[in-house]
Image 1 (cartoon, one colour):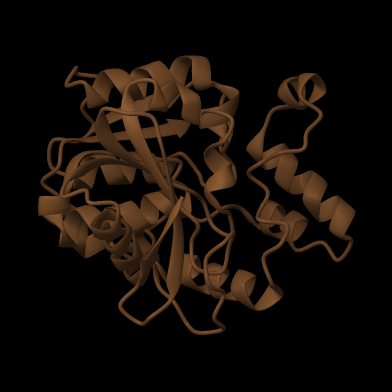
Image 2 (cartoon, rainbow, N blue to C red; image 1 turned 120 degrees about the vertical axis):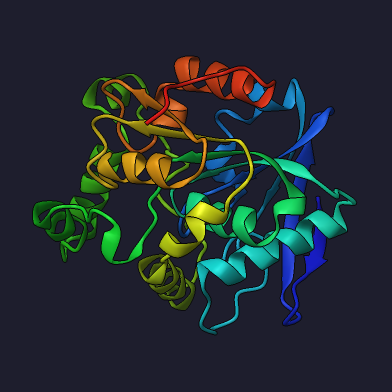
Length: 265
């Protein structure tokens, strides 16, 4: 583990595991690098995996300042610099996929191949989750809200076999002000105009049963990024990369190795 310093002086914790071609793994909103703990070993067997704790999470600083997904992308660049990595493949999921869009569009020299998982272009072109999902996540009873989030991440069959704790529900040590800042950053994301500028070979991955971030957004991303390919994981929900790792993990590794994975939109 090391620390990088962002342009505004915020200290960012980063982690490295494995060896080989570098692969940056970007976690979802309000989550630290622990988001990847359940599946990281599969990638670290072939790659030097790099993760970071987003500002506001984990061992990174937690300032109460506005932030954007575009600024998060600059944080990733600071981590690459601190880790001595000039260019890496990038796999971003959920909010991490939003950040990865900016990283690939604004720093094409730093990104080799790009994987965008369970994410969205944001803005007025994106397809929003339905009202029932929004109500369930805003439930005033924290236990019901948590149960709703678990159900959006995983299927009942998965949770019956894996009672938790779950790594994708948010950093439990994250202060409330940082959660608000992350939510605002994710909600304001709009990379629509930048998508055609992405030159990295791109794979878009999404679960067909994802109600947290509707699968229609995967089709939008794949259609707007030149040459992108689309891989849909049948029956998967938002945390497809964990529940369906036996399918998604090897497919991503094949894509990173240069194979043609998924379909053209």
